[in-house]
Amino acid sequence: MSHPPHLNESGHVHMVDVGDKAVTTRIATARGWLSLSAEALAAIQDGSGPKGDVLAVARVAAIQATKRTADWIPLCHPLPIHKVAVEITLESERVCCEVTVKTHGRTGVEMEALTAVSAGLLTVYDMIKAVDRTATLGPIQLEHKEGGRSGLWSRTPAT
Image 1: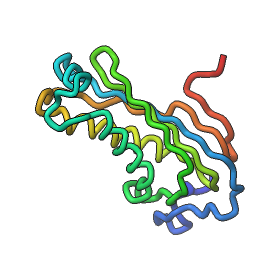
Image 2: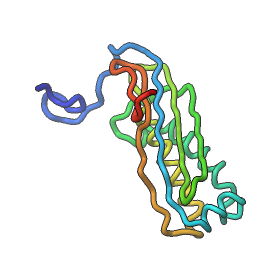
Image 3: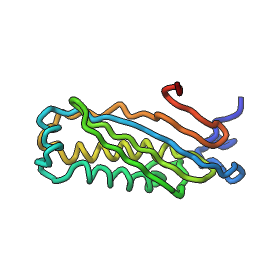
């Protein structure tokens, strides 16, 4: 068996060389949840939270995190981001954040989508923690990816 791609022949961590990989359209979607009290959800919905428009700030945080993923995750390549779509919805007892990221590049955008969801939900937590300190983050998961050598993957098979 060959050594893991992020370890060199000496066993030291390094960034993988993606220079010879084909440039393809790469898309990834991640989703996550933040469980909240009914009081916190109501404050988000009616805009009465102590820090203002929670969902607008969370969307901006998700977009910013997408663009800065390589600064957060040590072995990620900095990528040109072509599109970020952020959807934040209020559900019964939780907030759902879904982010889709698109690029044309040599490596995928799964980490960008996962980082964006994390940042968006952490921002909701930060903005509502004065109302609900029991908020619980997770799960955060990859839902879909396409492009590159491994092609299409989806958590839920297409019907």
